[in-house]
Length: 53
Image: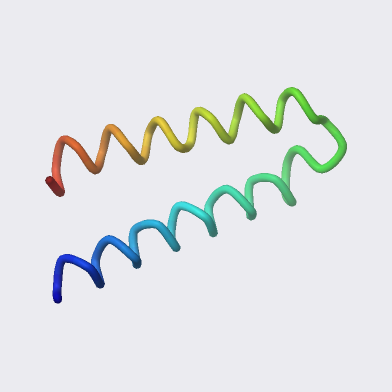
């Protein structure tokens, strides 16, 4: 049960980070926003695979 909760919390944190970066920095820039979102997802994935798995 703890693993499911931590995974859900981790995904929620990633989603909140993506939304906040979109709203703060890349409001009207589509390609820059897309690249930043992909980078954030890759960073979260690398951190998850290195430390949490």
